[in-house]
Image (cartoon, rainbow, N blue to C red; front, side):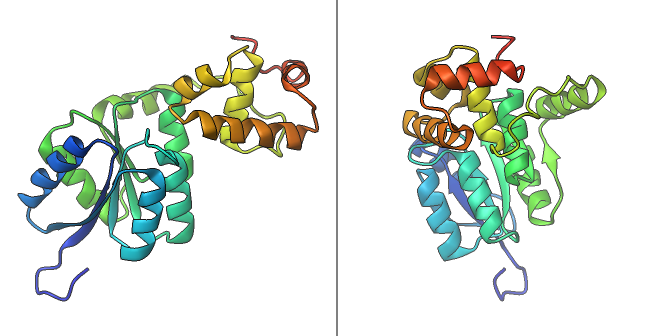
Length: 221
């Protein structure tokens, strides 16, 4: 917050599309009490800008180069829990929603949300309130009212994201297909695959698939 009588919420916009950043900046410039203090076009930049500027809120896209928005959120929140992350993305699948929440995001909106909704969500996140767009709220309600049988309890040494990758490996997906399914870069997928092989002490993809399917992963693929 600044030292003026009317404090401004300090916001950083992280999105790899210049038009999206420009549009958000215009929306927020017209809102009372909000100041855009920085922008980032990659997840790595978002982490760096967050560390340098310590904003109140970061509006975070999920699919960005170098480091995806989920990993950027995880690192930012871990380093400075006072920074609220509000996800603004086009992806509404369960994997994206719950991965963002586990990473520490306080809110989740879909691109195309009304201007007033975006402003209200930023204000809510800045005050520590969790806020979700209507479509996401319905998904959360459905998830908790119709819980699915857990299939990722095996291999506790793996992170949540590594389990997601292993599930897709076990379903027979290539690295490229996994990249598209999870909205992360091929390089990030390759890093996760290497970590999985090391943690499971397997030599190759075939051996990883055998281990995963023995544990019940990939059966729906």
